[in-house]
Image (cartoon, rainbow, N blue to C red; front, side):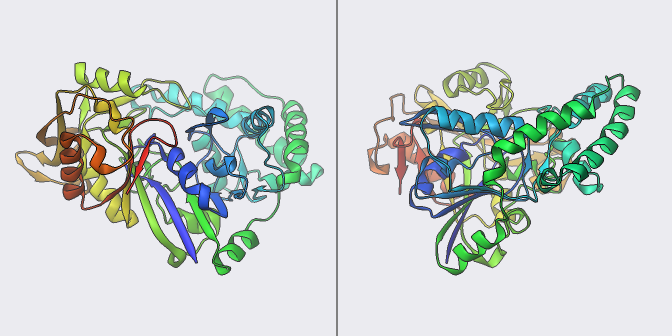
Length: 423
């Protein structure tokens, strides 16, 4: 059996979609196992540029069966929009896209409550995407969730929806929001279900058969290790488990079946939303990275916070997930930099410190320790091998590998699929 997992090694937006797309060329099964449409994977290929939020990034490879596993919460209008875009571009996904009926739904009241909670928290707001992810997972944990399978039983769906809308309307009014119509939501969502119903089927057998049959299975994680609700800087995290271990529950894959775990990281660091970010740059260098890397959220369009590469957080993510290697993206963003900083550790109160030594407030107080490395000041887009990179780029990468303790098996030198060095 051959199971590979792709996991974010920083705070998300690392470019995981590109590497899922590359590895999916040889995969039999690609499974998305966590999160919702707060994730955004950008794919640039011969069909165009696509911003995927729910559909696995392997959808562009005709031999790959794609699964949305039960650990994903689904925004039905968003999913239908993605599928219709594929149809418009002539991408055939019928007979090879399957959605678990166990998936919980994001409903309009989840999005409304997400925004109301953020407004009510004021300066203590988390900085969510406003997509309703947290409230949807809260309903799942609190036995108030509505699953995709419920839509197949119209009378049960209407009963459950009516109850939840009555509860959520009371919450909304208390927080200064508006009430919603259960009838309107039901009409819309039953229409969405009619469109996706051909793709809904139990996925456990598909996954297990592929593993037992020695098929090549690719697991696509959303968000990243440092947004995990247990191991991230709580409360500035996401609602679903973001570690490779989430694939057991979210995809139906036993942990011992996963042989290769690739941590994806940018050649620098970014973050969207609030929360600690020790290597953040607020001056000219940060703006330079943002401009070169086009660092704006795939889901929200918000400018991303930018900073130098933080080896401390990547080492921590590697320890949590058991990374076998790194996939490094956007090295080309540094093409015109004279000097690049590499954070090799932290200090707190004048003493060495680690990411795991404290909470979010502690991390805000940590000071990174840096090494300076000369830039290469030339384009690397055409490089096809490690040896073709400029000497200073090779030295930067070798030092990054040494400090993280991980080999960089993939190096992104541009946004397109082919602009990738595979070692």
